Amino acid sequence: MTDEVKGNSRRTFFIAVLTIMFIVFVGRLLQLQFLYQEEYGKKSEENSIRPIARDPIRGYMYDRNGALIVDNRPSYTLTITPAEFQMETIDYLARVLQLDPEFIRERIKKGKVYNRFAPVKIKRDIDFQTLSAIEENRSKLPGIDYQIESKRYYPTSAKATHLFGYTKEVSDQQVADHPNDYRPGDIIGASGVEGKYDQYLRGHKGFEFITVNARGEMLGAYNDGRNDIPVTEGSDLTLALDMKLQAFAESLMAGKTGAVVALDPNDGGILALVSEPDYDLTLFGSGTSYEAWNNLNTDPMKPLFNRATLTRYPPGSTFKMVLAAAALEDGVINSNWTITCTGSYQFGNRAFKDHIPHGVTNLVESIQRSCNVYYYQLMLKTGFTRWTSYGGEFGFGSPTGIDIGEENPGLLPSDEYFDRVYGKGKWTQGYLISLAIGQGELGVSPLQMACYAGALASRGNYFRPHVVQRIRDKKSGEMLTIAPESRKIELSAQVWNVLQEGMKRVVNAPGGTGGAARVPGIVVAGKTGTSQNQHGKKDHAWFIGYAPADHPKIAICVLVENAGFGGTVSAPIAGMCIEKYLYGNLIRTTAPRLEQLMAAPQDSTAD
Image (cartoon, rainbow, N blue to C red; front, side, top):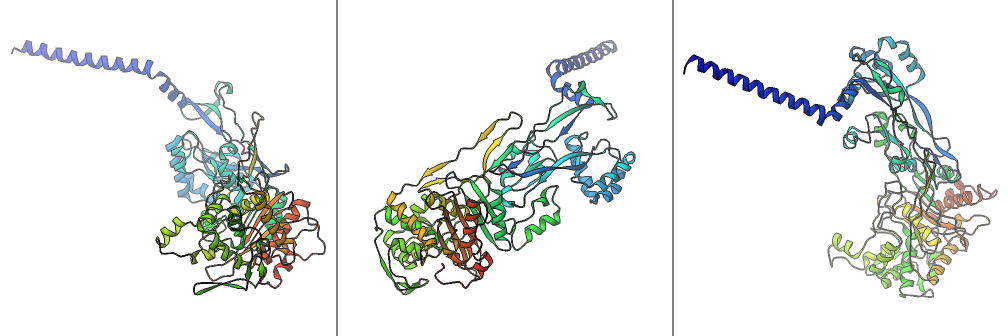
């Protein structure tokens, strides 16, 4: 091949390569100009237009009487814009803020990954002295700024800790999982009403668009603010709660361990929900320190544990109406069926004890005086399957569906459960004796027991308990009313009459175990219970009830752990709560105070 031919071949190859490159470049240019113009146009604008997020004010909460119970207060939050911040000032800033320098570095690092021009929240609720120190050194701290945010404020004497719940800063994982909903540093509801209704309470962020130059300096509002997105404030909630009753119930439970749940038996609205011990919700108002969070988690009294909804204890004699309903409704006995109680019942080689000998006892009297021997025998006549079925009808063994999220479904034993735990054919009728009086494997929560009391009060209307009644959209002014959900427990009128008569006698008749729950001028119906503690401590004291007996407006459950007899300890607390709610105040002037009632000798008939 001659040199001329070789030269022509190289020239042709070179021209071909240039032609291909030209075609590729032109094609890419056309692609960018026409196919991806919108996408890359937006990215280009991002380099010159900076969105500044504005947080909405979280929705307020009101009680059933219109009292403001969860408010907001202004709070200063220090921010750093990573693109403008000088890292050599971290040590000084850390000293002023009393933070670990590494914490600030980590925050800035995460902020750069998300958007280096977006302000990163470093510390919330800084005091005026710290804010002044920052302002005095503004020239030395480029990229430092502050935002005015809001934090939760509780203007009443009631705490309602486990009902309200707390807010917290969104986690990195939540931001990654929901990039369209959350940004780093956002505050969201984490528990209770705050968590369950966060989508309504949180509102929607607003954005101001600012023009910046190549050095990141702000030049002014983009397009005179016409593209700004206004903030949408969070919706307000009206709760079924009565804050005066809530505060009063909390005061009665101070220093004790247990729970009080009161509800309206006509719609299931929660009037009060107390779990003691509790904690201070303001610890979560501006970011929780590791030390504070660790102290709460390691506290042996477990203040974070919601005893109103998560406790699973045997209910003792308060459960006897379930067995009575099953036996009556299915015709196993009638209300005139009697037994003779000698103080114990012999089954096999074991004697099952009662509090005292009750003598000849019929069904109404068995509820009134809480005769255990009556129910030992009634359980064997009625059978395990019926007992479990009717227990399920009253909501036991299942979550109630309350709108604060956390709850324990409890345990309602059945044939299948015993077969699984003990082995088929390896358990006997003797296992049922303890269940007859609400002991053994049976486990319930105070919330379930309050719903049970409400169903007994309303003659079978079982309402799903709820805390929130209405949601008001601030932007539109529209009010969303949450309709109560209910189902019917089908028992004959005669059965309801017997159960309710027995419960009235518990509180109002001689020999009744719940006399300490009496309220002047009001007929209270109730049932006491004392459940054994398997850990060697004193028994747990229960009381359930409702009032007025003929037209119920409140149903209640009181549980005091390791306190003794329900009739001595829990009944007076319930009575005072009923009196407070129905009268608006305590009207008794000569009756002994709660401390005197609880300090009295514990009669073995108190149950």
